[in-house]
Length: 493
Image 1 (tube, helix red, strand yellow):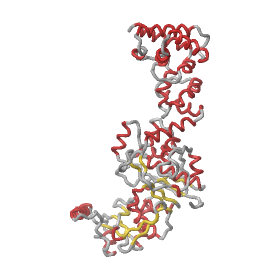
Image 2 (image 1 turned 120 degrees about the vertical axis):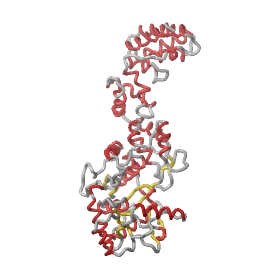
Image 3 (image 1 turned 30 degrees about the horizontal axis):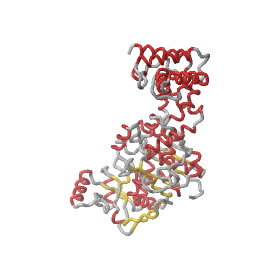
Image 4 (image 1 turned 90 degrees about the vertical axis):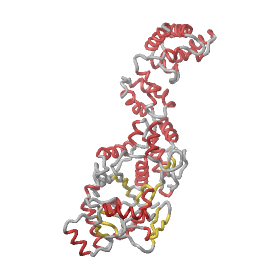
């Protein structure tokens, strides 16, 4: 990799939720820019007006910031190469389209949609790949100029070379050679005066001095076109990197919308906004997506700072990457364990408060060591820790009956536990555990029977963090109140 400072860009279209594929491109762009002391740019490619969803631009910016990928230039931060929305750069594209036409590299096309559709249907009947048939390619320039002057609707197409080959170099795949007779004349400017991706992206990358273009492998099909446009202008090419494709979790076939729907049913998502709401951390998500296309160990746990230190585009791989949500869980849980107590407490507090719980910050700090090892996602804290901040709990009556015992016997155990606890000066687990274990031995009962009843009574659930440490944090007064409530439930059964 060149030691020259890299200028990289992520250029999503605001047509839907920010996908993990966009996040991965952004992450690699960010790592490369920071590794080389360069700049990372956000550009919004919003020329597809029919599909643009106004709210998604903000979602993209919020998503990048949630991931910690702060961009140096962009729509909301500015920069000397702006504007950073393509709809605000119309004059720039029109100017460059005219340059191409003036030099014989592009031409106006007056074909109507109906005519193009008829030609497409005929090509399909002949079992040909649909393509533009070149009707307007050889129009007399004076006639074309007259029709434009008369206000006739038209697009502008790039005039692809028809002989020889185009050799395009991808950093991961090497030289890609395409016979020019297989290439067709694509539209550069639409009839509404807006550019297509093929012109806008190439012009913007040059104007914004982008040195490295990292993008999805779906652009390999039009890679020869883009290279020819750059060469028609006489510009230096950026270094092109087409990243690996994402596969279904099964590893069979490209990820689809149906796979996304199925993932949501299992509590997963491929959208960054959802991942945040589902309790995933930016650290876990970054670690997960970084290794889907980066040729380092698949189990390497890294912060973004560590990634910057290790990253090179030479270590990226074109091999397809299957979406593995279990790996996401693994990385997320691992990073949760690396957070400081204060950091994790700050991240968990919103989950408690959003569920109507009144959070005591000192109690929150005390429960972090009990919760940390049990969390896969941040929202798991509710299942394991909500009872700490509730005044009362409502146990399932059936859960209060220990295995092998009836309600009366279980009530007797709860009554004895209440008496033992009531006599203690405090509820530190060092004071509480020995007398209760002594009671288990004296009674001949199974520890699971006694402690199971006590757990359900004090926490309201069958599964919780360590019982005695939990009771200490809940406090003696509240524990006695909850055990008394459990006794009343058992006595009614």
